[in-house]
Length: 519
Image (cartoon, rainbow, N blue to C red; front, side, top):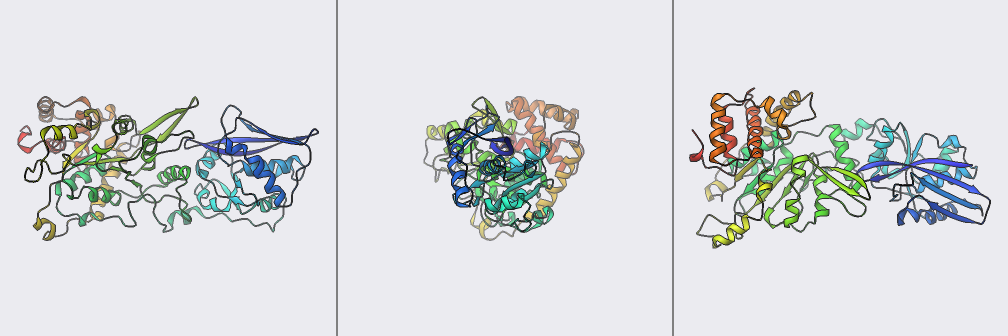
């Protein structure tokens, strides 16, 4: 008799269901596993054999064959250990086939039979749910993470013996009860992916009024932002305030982000989900794989870990040229597509991109009292970031050096909570505007949405025509200006884009001086 048990694995950040087929027949004693297996999956044979022995079960001296289907897909990871053990119990007649029917089994077996926690449980359960499965058996330490999906009935166990007892109908088996989903979501947990235990408040940033305004616009419309200025002017602190300005995540956003962190194994002990918006700030030494994901067994990178949150790159010109140029596609499509072994994987990467840079190698240009860089050095440094990358950014703002009076004597400005209320209203406006569209924010509008929601009167069209020629705007930068002006109009509660909104949006295109703005 061939026993079939359903398990799963992670491919990229997508869950894949695996059918574990087990057969025990007459012949020379051998335990073979087939199905295009990775080394760690092949090692399940010894883990399962030893775990069974140490929990009081012994395999018969017969020919044992285990097939992981579908065969054309490479199997990796250790998620199928428990399913293999349950398949063996069924094939030996110790469990009826009905005991495991309709149940998803996930778990890595330790040599003593205990169930070790896994990474990437949530994507597998989501795939199983979409395939019609409603029950799952997994390690007790993964139970709270799995319970985020309300449609899944989750059973958590500590060891293989408890799973066997429970499937055998032993009511005394130790089974972790399922948590209530709403209570999990509402609990106060430690946040994941934040720059520190505490998010700086915008009121703590002295001066930099124009930069604060640009950040409010960027968050309100999900626009990309470039901060330029000398060292110590507050660029990094301004960027770290952004998560505190963003409205709370919806349940769908929490699940999507938690799936990414689950695959990377970054969910902290006792924290089954990502509740706060991520803030990722990789160093300049990050590799393309570390930033955009990939590898032999593809995993998401920092860009995907920032999904629904913020990706901040400080000292942007200091990143490797190949890393900087690879942002061309993610900043347009908001996803990262990779092909491995003939299969396509898509990593989500929809975030607010914030880049910060000094204007020259020493950082003090154009203050010639402190800057000693030559014109060649300055041009070479600023040229490290190509025009196509800069063209994909929406707002550019300079953070000037603070005076002593601004640093010590200025009263505190608006708090993050006050700014967040305005941003929340703009997000609600955009939700109503794009209710029948996959677009959610002004910064993500396509050409069709721009034409529909950014209509200009005669005076505004004349202004944009003059600005297009004078400042040599590209088609992309022209549309990004319109998107930014749409967000500025939303912040003022205006239904239409007016001339004053276009003028402010133009000021944020590579810092056009006020004297050069067409009248």
